[in-house]
Image (cartoon, rainbow, N blue to C red; front, top):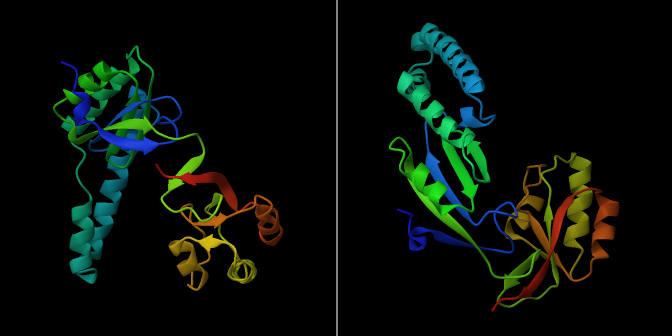
Length: 237
């Protein structure tokens, strides 16, 4: 039975997931990142490496003994045993994904995974696997033109997002001086706080609202290659 659309959480976007998928299922699965290359052989190789590394790490913590004290116990608890059941689960879902006759995209990180697809029946198939936990479902709802961002009371025409970049002290000083002297722009709260803080690495959620695309040329003279994307700001409906 296909999962009802009502169970899916709407994600308001300017495009489908990865430009082509309407639906997604997210779930928790121990050692899910072993599925990154989606190969039975690679699962076994990765599991073997992780077991060996954890055994070495555990031996080191045991040798440290009373030197580490409470910290030793905390570190030891973080190393969860990789059971044969975990390995079997990884191979089971890998076989389903490898033999699927539908278009999909798998994204994994740690013990978390997302599968994006346009086929609800395929999501149903994954949903029935008993070893997947903390499952949730998403549906991309496209409600605006591509590369736009809606605001209730827009004051600028464009929003430009930074790349993750490590700056030198001198580069940050020049960038800070430039941005703080631009009175026609709006800095995101996180960027505003970063300018007066001790860190030199920009984040990809930093943004600047501005009115002219030519403003990006001036920014590029101060620090080239800092912007990763620019979106047009539109009036929210």
